[in-house]
View 1: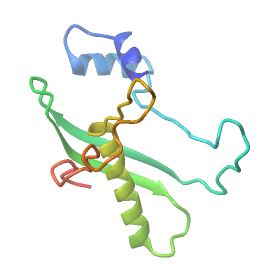
View 2: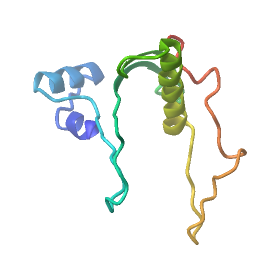
View 3: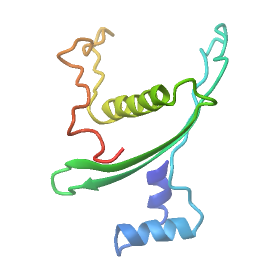
Length: 135
């Protein structure tokens, strides 16, 4: 959706001009989502929800596609914590797992419907060079 928003405001002068033009037109250059319970509605929904937001600053080599996450800022509303250090670790750990999901995991399927990427040889957790320099 973000790409469609930007494409409608593409500026020949480059990325900054395109973003400026899109934001000036009131385009939201962010993505949001919500997940619920099973589609058949037989399972109970979660009894609670936490809310969070992340902003990430990256450096991208446009020639090689190499990406370095320079900084990530996370904000979570998790209610009143019993142990703030545990909550911090859970939020940061979940964020790093999501980085792994979006940047290094590939779910592949066989023609007969079997999932091919189930083992530890295919599952590549984020390493120290994959996480933000400042989190």
